[in-house]
Length: 517
Image (cartoon, rainbow, N blue to C red; front, side):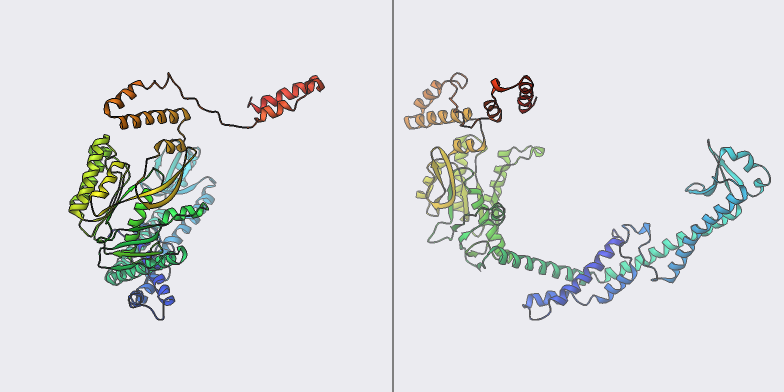
């Protein structure tokens, strides 16, 4: 009982479109589609009833009335006619009273307290309260500026009008209850039609994507295989295509047995690690949803669960920091993932101290390998973890290739076997727009830390202590090469010896306007 006239109109429109779709899908169809098409038919009686009963654009609420179409119910049409003609009678009565009294400002108004009443300004009070008008016009109320009256004829007409309006609304409510009951009786078949439309819509959308985006049919079986050739991220690819750039496709093979089931992925920020993780999870999801997938070739064994631990977010309302949220999500994966799950983890342990984070990430990877025995992609900046590939048979190192060119990092977005040699964090910081002095200072500190790491902990601390303060030894920031400014060009074009005083004054104002003055 929470619906209204517009809901009935929505069902009417839905059943009409269902019949239209069924007509367009006639002919030879796969069995699953044929069943869906059959579910769209057989609603003609209800659709015809709703079409005949409802106006084109009904109101939201039943109490608003006006949603039953004219001609559907004779009793309703009669009540509406009386209600609507009554309003015309009121207008004619007002004109009659104006003529009788000679008061052009006389009006018949209505409110919820007095109903219909005759209103004149206070300037006509003496006339309206004197004979002969006081015998016809019955005084009801005086306000600061108006007098209000009624007549026996007006009161009688008000009763007729109010009864007609209420009667019309009551008839509409009764008719609505009947229509609602018919819809509820047909609810199971309407639900079947809705499911059929949803399946046709989804299938058509998948087909459109497969053809338009060059997707391929995946091989699905009951194995634990996960092998993708030329996989792509559909959303990132679409964004790059609109910008006129190409998406770099990558392979992924996590089939347990002869090949490792876990890839440990290293590489700098912005290189594409997160994209690679998510695109493979999306391929697994799309394949099991019945869609073609964005890849040249794909073999996906049944995935029982899909887990992701990506991004950074807090839950302060529940007292959870960013790191706590990360740990809660990681705990859910380690406690629930089975050997048919597919897991992507991005930067485990980054929200705490370096050695704490490294320890947690290390133990998490070992647990996934030894206990969960799941297929997983594990992205990290802890290069120390790449040593696990030599210790764990099911783990293999992979990295996103980059090229260091004259101090700038160029992202190739290619996933290759092997480990990253470094993180390129300082270069990425410069690309992000950090002030050059900050970037240069970070490079100096990084070199000192790396030198101390090679020479031992005590030596590292000594090197850090010897680093000059940032303010005491600012890095030289080279000024970017640039051409002459607009102001300089204009000054160079001036020849003072050849200018009159008026020209010189005009040139001065011109130069000032360039500076924004």
